[in-house]
Length: 325
Image 1 (tube, rainbow, N blue to C red):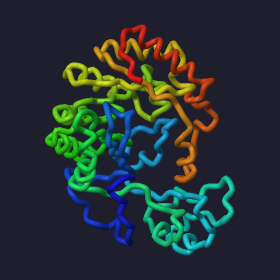
Image 2: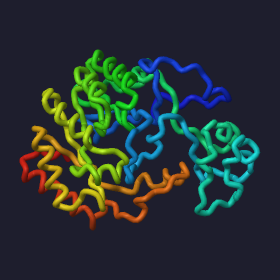
Image 3: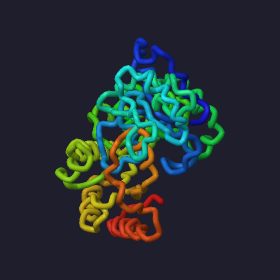
Image 4: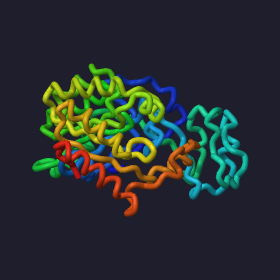
């Protein structure tokens, strides 16, 4: 994180009165100097919470809408303080964990008491509440980068799963003449997506698969609403980049890519980009005591597997798309 610091955890953090969803929301990170999430140099604001459960998700800490406890084994000195503190008896009693998970998630309610007691930072809360004013103050620190190119991108999770909060951030940036973008999986009510269009310069819209049943099996949701929203979005004339995650065992075969290309073409989208599967988020699953179903799939960032990205670009270029590198 840069600038906006995660607030310290206190005993009453779960029981505070909740502020307005227009002015406050839950983040899990803010990153500066991104060049892959919209034009120019971007400030990325990661909102917490997602209504999909993609099997390959590289940010599992983005899925829950509330702060949660994560575990960093390299910082653990096996002092046992967390065992004494946890009111739910959710901490694994084996101090030498090996491959076992640290926290029993069926018992843990993310009260945060273990993280408060931990003296080394091995247990910590991921996710924190922030206000729009704080975020805009952080955004303005990079204003010199926005003069000629660059801006702010809302990411996640699914930023439109906190629709009022996301809209207010975008409004404020738009009023400051800062280029705005949002990354969305599109599985949200159309009214929430429609509301941000006037104050968003670029919509980065994921299309994962053309087949409803396969999409449901691998993400937990049908793609019907997503495709309806893409069609509605295409009729607004808003600048849109369709981004396709390339996932082994899901959509990297030419037959699937051709069907996706046809579907996107029908919606008059001109620009597409790709997100090749990688294993960079694997360690996060163990921190959160979560199973990772893509453990044994090869990264498409490797030299050997990069041919699949080359093939995807070739197929989409053949349909006349502009390919964003």
